[in-house]
Figure 1 (cartoon, rainbow, N blue to C red):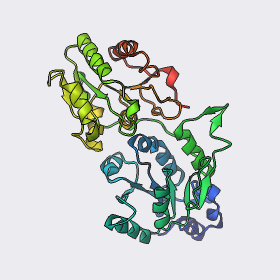
Figure 2: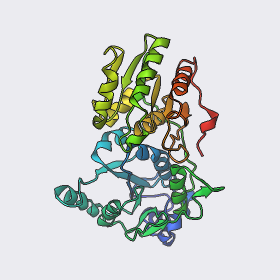
Figure 3: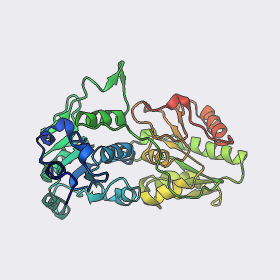
Length: 363
């Protein structure tokens, strides 16, 4: 590789600058950037251990984008569950993908550990578990970063961010994305987060509304079955041309069947468990509205720019609500007042132009 300017730029791009050993500057090009070419070859290997749940994975998207802009000389490879591969690569979130092993022993683990021969420069671990730390340690990266929350120890990380003094603002917890952003800033990130949605080239179906009545990681987040039935009846009484599409994971099929069984198949289509994540993204992109519990699917809908209504009850939206700049309504009291919530949803859905609620701005 030849760079205009010679040896200094070569040293930078091959991580030979002494300053690159300082963790505070790893996520930015601090020195000699003005002498570097406009477009750098992405030769430095940054690997990202992704979270395990869809909602958390989606919330990393603006952070991945910021890392790529801060280090245009680095390629990003995502370490994630195999089910995320098609979605993540098709959405253009990274340069590569490595599937996580199914367990810490066995053939899949041995195949995974062979990737250590690719010599990643660093690994950022967005997960918060001993298993994820063991995976990162086994890959042999000389730098392994993550958040160390109060009461936890993560000795397998080489550097950890302690949010004790900065994860609250005026005594109030902040959003998970802001916590991760603070961690990346601790390691040198100097880029603002871009919260623009990732809009797929899909044609909207003006009669298609999606609902997500399940929640894979916490059943207590699920709005009661009868509320969903009442909502569908109310929507159909407002517009008989509307078609409801029920989405969700295979584990939520029983709930979806219970809802769909009371309605005509032409009016309520049960797609639960019949799509992978990439197919789900494509389906959601054709909806004019998506309504659901606090779940990963609703984060995906919001990330795709689809007008979304999220029902909160046992959990609060402060730290986990969707964060992209898309039309979004949060109903905090959906469980306490289901009738009022049904009316509020119908009022929102049948407005001529969906708008974002000022009350749910991301912070």
